[in-house]
Image (cartoon, rainbow over all chains, first blue to last red; front, side, top):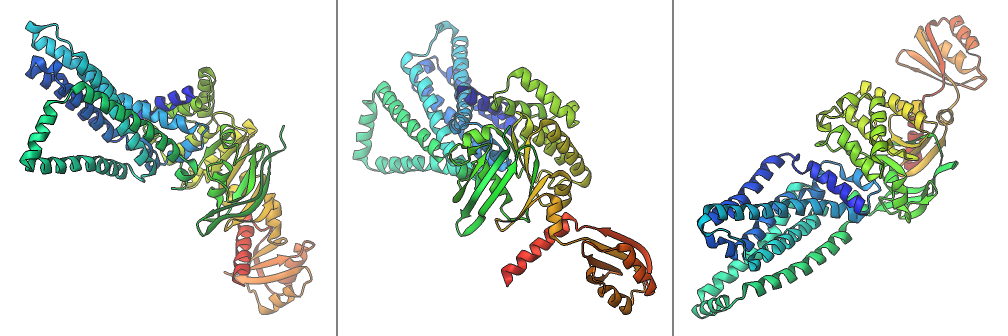
Length: 246
Length: 315
């Protein structure tokens, strides 16, 4: 099984940068996290290495990376007419899904981790008088774990969408729409809360008393549960008879 | 060695209200090229998908290499190769990488894989261009590569779904030749769908004719041709008088005479003496330029079968 997963991963990494527009998309996906996490943040303040923003940025960028790449996983194969041949091979279902997930998540998370490392070097070079600077463990741990789990979340959601989408564009639109809905709901909720002075004061009090580590651990737990559920859903949705007759 | 590569009993597949495959019964002996012929939408591709275990049958059963396609689909796919409706070539990858990927999928060792890739690409005349991106190749070259991919792991059964469809005459002919050579060398059983009758006539040891998911005939191409009737005579020339045609029709060895496009098409009984009939026509004042005697082609037999089926459906 592991050999089969690695075989699919081998092919995925070969084609990742060779899709139409793949190099430009990848370059953009590199520039933004490296610009923010690797340069802008550590340049602006030596305290960056202790800021919760590091973990938040890592999480957001790993998700953004996946949103642009994962829709191609199955919809791309369908669009390019390579899916039936892949399904007619001896590869087991889980190997096909996991091989694609590993490479997609690996790229997204790997880029962010590299940006995190570059950020640390930048911080030590720019603020050399305060060196050696190191990310606080309460920041580093959530940054590493949260970005991995959130990248996995988007990758799994993307695979679910991509399995049924006719085109990559269609899969991307569905995924973006699905991810925007909770964001829009949160914004609406924020506007409503901020419009009421009493609620606004209550929210500020609540935020001030938040323990970042506890929040991060809670989010991590929720993400693990969501990832497991989505993986099970993706495995269940991967049915050769349905994929071949689409 | 196994005698029967594929056995199909009452196989059916329904998509909603459409019955794509209807109670199909087939037996494909091992080591032959088996042609599965039918017009568009006759259920050829669906049958291949059923035999590969990619679709669940609505009824009946099928075995490939003794493996049940419904319950042992993974084993069926492990022992077969396939070129489906589209070539399935990864256009961003080189020819070499495409084959390497499938060699890895079928767990071939590096040495075995490399040797086999070289052997197949050399036979197909693609070896020198193996490092080029497959997307830059012509459709004919991509089809050849896809055939090589289907044969890479030396499968016992190979499914080829219209391998020459969309190719120009030269590319199709070259691919047919490669295919025939490869099959002769490999000893595999090939299940080939096509609606190119000349291709089937040239390549296939046995053919089955399907329409609307139903089997109309199965046998050697000669047997299928024979179903369209006995030998026939084509007489080219002029002065085909009514008297000449009447005398010809009176002959017991003549089944029917049709005058069309300036020539006579004469359907004969098996025992007909062609020389005698030609003499009769000359005596009746017909000026003969050319006479051809032959059997109906597979295409003519196929069209006759389609017409018969059409008539039985409308009556």
